[in-house]
Length: 282
Image 1: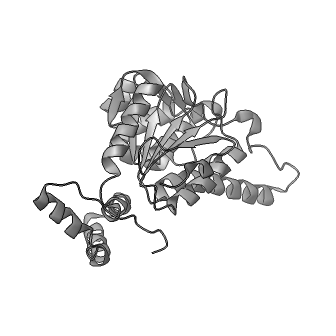
Image 2 (image 1 turned 90 degrees about the vertical axis):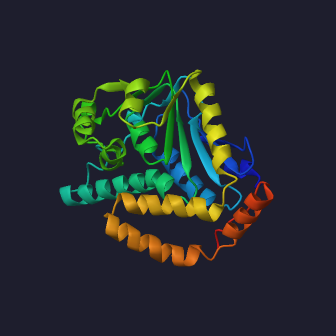
């Protein structure tokens, strides 16, 4: 396994709790509020991890006991900056800043490895953007969530309005939460399908559950796991016919893997298959 200390940063703590699993913990006290340097570090870290063949699953969590993230650091927000610019230049400046911010959060979705989000405590505003960009979401019983941007005069612009409705599959509920800005809690998050599991035990409980789930995924064929994430993301944004055609084209190459032979031999021998890493440079 790669020396994961290379992924430690000013705002992220990196460990490997089990083989081929990288735990990234957001660590900017007191509330994990995001400013530019925070999300820029997230983007750079995920881009590097995506190329690390030793990392097969990522768990994203908070290092703080009672808070996942309180969202945007309003004291360091880009809003209102550049007032000396004329209107057109101010608009371009804002557009470029938002686009870079969006790309940083979308890096969770675009990285090759599946990302499991372990939500604990307060998880509002940007927390929903982040969680929505992850592949699997678990939350602690103490989790308090909310799409709060409307409360501060904004439309959520970093991915929630694009991803959240597709995740919950209920446009009316998604609009209710986004338009009212009301908070919702663990049981409701599970009921509407935003999280797949509610876990007792606070931060430790949900983190342990996320690591256990990651440990179930990590031994599987990395060709199959990377392909499954990629194809499911494609299918979400395309029709069934387009998705099937893309799947067929994708598997023209992927079915040439030796991983299927390894898996079948292991089943016949009643042993556990061991798959080689998927070199990111291939």
